[in-house]
Image (tube, rainbow, N blue to C red; front, side, top):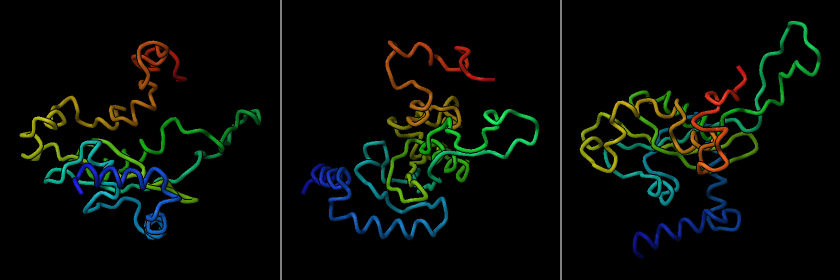
Length: 197
């Protein structure tokens, strides 16, 4: 089987995971992931097809990290000052960032010398969602000598995950749509005066 045929087969298995043969294996793995650390460096991507599609290469300078994020909405400490009950709002709060973006940021915090290239979903259970994050060492010779990925070594791409420049960041900022119909979110929500200060 050719490599493209192999990736296609893996992709089809992940498309209908609950009906596929690998479902029991993934379920068993997630039990182990749940009891392990929240951020783990991996030797190989769990979903090789997705990793390759998002730019991963099996060479020095690239690593894959599995990041675990708590599911559901967020809450904050109860406000002790006077408020009307409806303004208390300390639980059932909707996050302004997606869980995927939070997973990327946590992986970047763990590996400060690396830049986030992209990430993809690998599973969820009742408590957590799991993502694998592709990280690139911006100062590695393999990276800045490779014309396809050397752009990430340029200074304007430093800390790109914290500025919403990854794919997940673009989606959260409302920039996935074209120019038409997204005038209120371009160039940013803050610059349009739509962000509550």
